[in-house]
Image (cartoon, rainbow, N blue to C red; front, side, top):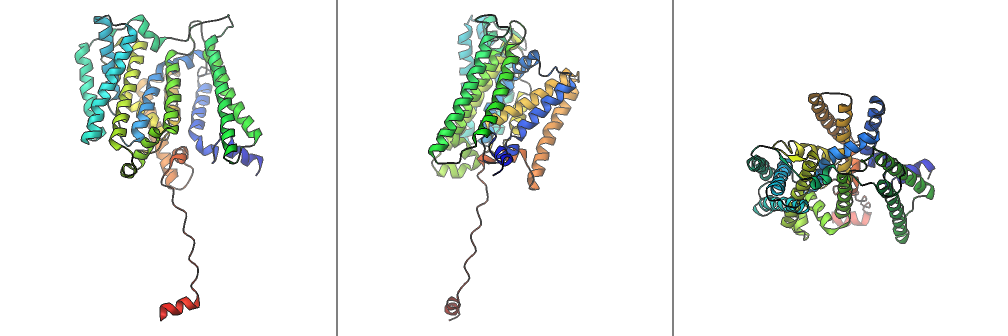
Length: 432
């Protein structure tokens, strides 16, 4: 095997071509480079990257929950309204009843869980399609937001604002950077190194093929380079800013849900239900329980996203959450999820969300009007998916098909070997 083939096959640890598995990442890099040139270097400045994470973290959190809903074969149209309803309930509780802000966060999560249980009950145990249930929820909780808040804004206390507008604090000696952000970067590099070593150990114990060490070295160098660059950018912002607290929450959720969906029985059950619900049920998967928990989890994450947005805005208002569900759904589909369910990854959804976030951010930096931003985003979403579907139908390279290849259950079976030709004796027996 040539060095180029080794590099293509193993650069990111996959068993197939990296260009196919990481096509969406290549798209993200291309968008970043395009706007970096177009905006004269503004896209990758510390201030802009910090602003992007702060402004779009709640959409990426919604994309995590929406990924699981779509993988299970459903859709949730109520997430924006649930976020807005939770935000006004928490803001009112803290303003009128002097509820401490930590208890306010707990209350918001409980409200999200209750809403999710309500919608999950109708979907899982009554059998009403999730599209209808969440469409009703979108109207119900949007009206609830305006009724409770009297269509007015309600401010939140300073402590609560930290989860949406706060940053990692300054500690330690004056290095010119935020030291906690640098430490997180070091921890991330250590985690990547440990994961690579663990993966090689596992493959060695299974007597599986190992990637050449020089390929592993290149892979680690690329990942370390990205982590170091991001750490220095977020740590080098103006005094008082660094990695946003909402970004920390997002990172924790991405790691937790990636592990859950990839390495636990519950996560595999979600993919099984989305791939073939009847077959999954016959094999012992508790179909109603999976659907209930998926819908409930989505509302909990919507409640969290709503509180982060309210904290960043310093107040809850009647216009909160408008069209959030569309952004979350777009992020999931751009990230490689299948419309029919059963396919998709958390990391892919985050990449899809970043594509939309950076596209929106770059257009705003160039002074493009909000009307044209919406038009361009809609066209990009439509053309990206249509082009991928067309290529897939023609048997060509498909970004979505490549990203979801490890999760496919519909690979055609290998053709049966041709039957051996009959002997003359066999033919005579048949004839006789």
